[in-house]
Length: 497
Image (cartoon, rainbow, N blue to C red; front, top):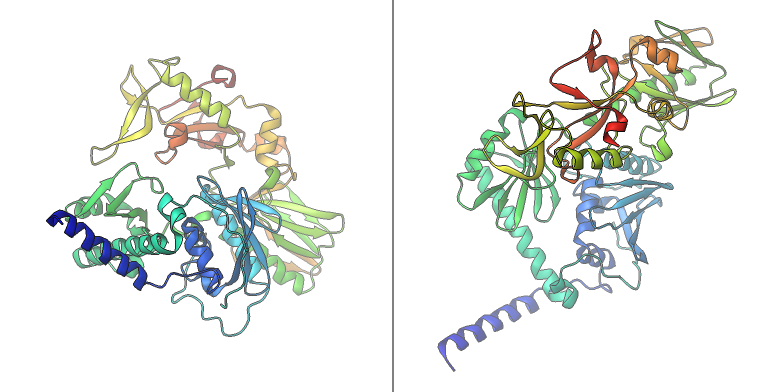
């Protein structure tokens, strides 16, 4: 036998001994862990939804449908929700409502919906996470389904689950943990700077203004590379062997970033006064009042956007439900409109790329602050003045779409106010809530110059639309004295379509 053949044989024997020495998890021994390890993307998504300590809150995972692969997640208080596999991200189904985890806002909605399920009861003795955690853009075993359909697992896993799968997981975890140790030593980081996304992906939380400096420092460390086009972070990711660290700004993660704390104040204060015996709720604004007689309850529904709903809370009164859309005084958006105007965006990108609006509107490749060109991401430019176009404004949206954008399919009343406890006072049977303005119809919208304007602007995270994002904003934020603010241009709806 040649030396080369002998070496190959020894390596093969050592590898076989190593794999045999690691007891593979079987379905019969531990059905919960078997399912989690067979579907690594399920583990990552559960971590996002319920923190890395999600096993403290679930008792079983059932595979209930093969295509698309659908999981039933049983919580420790007897409640349940569903996760449906998709090639880009999971769909979460809670109490009949679906949330697509590829959308950050919907992920936040799903987190709150699951939290509400958990509030329905917790058995004694649940240890919980080691530290208190905000929403993170992330028990005894129960039986799982007898048949576990193939998901997106790599070929080596499908061919030899018990051996290759176990070996692969150990390798990924080691790379990430090794990278974290190196970063801690070189940059004086702590565990609080790292949030686990999956076995080989972590969020690296650093101050927003210092992210570029951190990229430069980490690039200089042996073994680390920078990928400006990495998905999951607008500024890219650092890679170390088979692991990746997504650069995220501290202070921008979790519930507060979703802008829902204002509606919580309103909901909680109404509940408090209802318990004190108030019957009528009266919102008093500068332009009008809005009264809900014989109120009996209030429910937060801000994460229920199915079918184009706009309400953040629903108050139950004498004549049924009263949906309320809650807006802070400084609210800058009517809605994020990537889905509503997907077809319009696709045509705009195609026409700009073809030069239909040149030379005033052309594409140039996006280059980050480190000089890296981000693949598939463009910037809009005026080629005549060689200046960046900060937005394309579309003001002539169809009337029906304007009403849908503002009031939604549930015909919500829009009320502006950044609430504090001092805004709530009880006068006999009445709860008086001081607010800034109340919008019930298009006449109110026009009075305050709040007509919805589609603003298509740059967003380096939107690779599907070439680096553009569609938002609908109030007119008074985009125009001053009738003129467009900033370096924006106007196009009509028909010009794009």
